[in-house]
Length: 49
Length: 565
Image (cartoon, rainbow over the protein chains, first blue to last red):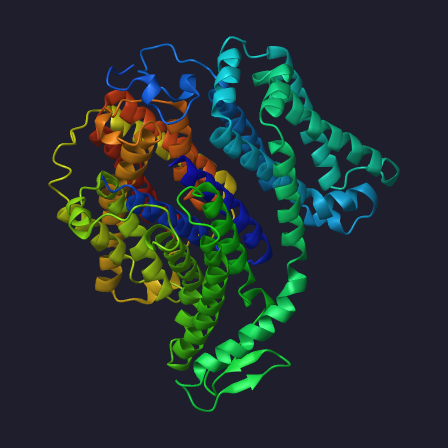
């Protein structure tokens, strides 16, 4: 969880730079995409062993 | 404290911040709590500054003012980026040292003197901002005012930081984390430099993209129109100019960041050097998918759906490609024996391990995001397929209904009362931030027949009042709030509280709300408080549903459609 969150914070930072240079990238779609990626990774790693 | 969760079972330290406590106990204001307060204070001030000040107004002016106009935004990004990287990795790698600092911080009161100095510096900063950005200073004093303005802003940050965390603890924090501050500075400097210089790399990259797109179009259409001089590519019916920023460079940057950090964080699971091949594979994958995206966009436009091609598909397909490559990267890193040191479970065992509480709490929320991305990708200037979001979430909630039977869905007056409070706060912040927004009903909806218009509004309202509150409360309050405390989050009662969980769940919730992110964070804090105070998911859902129902009424009665679009 901590590792994934750390990674997602960095991704948000990188996408913020991307959004600054490419105005077509919407803030909303970036947030949804990163939330989807984080959530899916958590589900994949969350399976009980 | 809950008896079944002993401190030594926690995966990481910072006990004073991470150990769940009941609200009836006196909370311990450790390092993390103070950093959270500091982040909220600075975020609120940054929000005011970013709305009020426009650096573009300064760029044309020379001297120090022109320098501020050109580099001000990059400097703010750099400061925020440094703070995020430093604190994230300090938390991940230096937990023991942070615990000791946290205990020390808990014994030191907040410095009112520095807090007053912070307020004074920010008032000075605000007054000079009015003079500087409004061009109210005499030319002779302009640069001097700019210098005092810079000193005021820097002093404000410094005094604010010292008010909550004393100088000696900051020094200790930097010392205990070794070279981390230097690495974070280097990473931020590199990111800003690459970000500002990346445009120089667009031109060569776009030539390759142009050739790839032309190659992908070949088997599907005849009579391709291609002009490398103007980068125009398409058919006789529909063509696009491949702009330099569409070269796929941003996707490559995102995958590089994702891949490098993944391999470092999960290095114990990876088999080196084989795992390094995932980086070039990911870069090649995202580059090819970007070219396919542009080819598909041209084919959609050629088929007659030009609005969809240039509207929703253009913006959503890139993020879908990124998610596909990033997920493919992580699955390959975990599942391909040649790349991972993890023992692969036998097939029978894997089938039996299907009990996944994380999925139970997250799938309704994820289904809304997936349906939303799909609906937007096939939309032009209006999302006609919004009802998909409701149907997707309702379907998942129905399939998993037995798993939710154990949760307490009852609610009292407290939840709706908090919902009304959040509604009032939301409207106030929105009125301030989005006063110039277009409030009219979208033209596409006006032009539609009455039954279609009513159907769309009904599904939009049902989604706002039923599926979204349930899905988001399960995800952010039911899951994130407790998962931060323990991997076995279901074993914890819903009242379990840590400042870390409160901060992460609320910030993540807020970031999903576009330019209303600050209102989203405050709403997240209040919904979390509702859950912690009442101990029932039903109260948090009732609070959220009340807010959304009032917002729906506000949109429909007062024609504030920007809140729904």
